[in-house]
Length: 174
Image 1 (cartoon, rainbow, N blue to C red):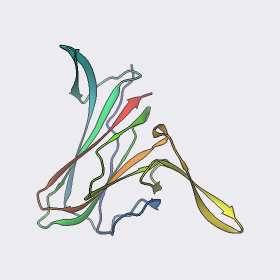
Image 2 (image 1 turned 30 degrees about the horizontal axis):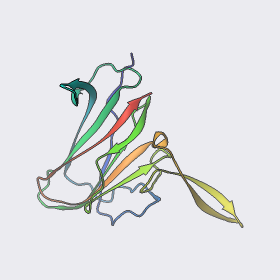
Image 3 (image 1 turned 120 degrees about the vertical axis):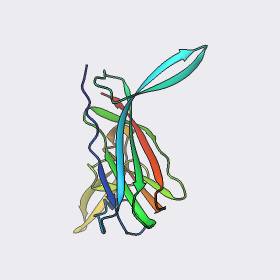
């Protein structure tokens, strides 16, 4: 059995513009009144009357190889005004691999992935390397597997006062 601790969260609220792909993680521009609540749940799958059902077990103390965990965070604007943008970055817990399942992007929420520990993010998982060509440093991109993802990031635009946004992703215990 393996003990899994709740994922460390890298959470920031920023007042920056929309994120382009392959951009470095944004630095916090302005501290905002944002409350973050993180939980980790174990996914238990059972077949009941021929139908597959999922049960989520909150804060599991132990897990075994092959178990699937849901890493979830609730983001709440506890300030007195709407926020133009909130950025939430979550790393993969040690000893796990990203399954490819995450709260999807929408017209208002941009989802991106990092394979380099959160230095660069892209709309689809990509390995990014810096190489020198003709005396100039350029970034090269290549498709990456879901198992290579080290961080997921959501950029949420226009977070209303008192609004709560729930986000999550799934990992498999290695």
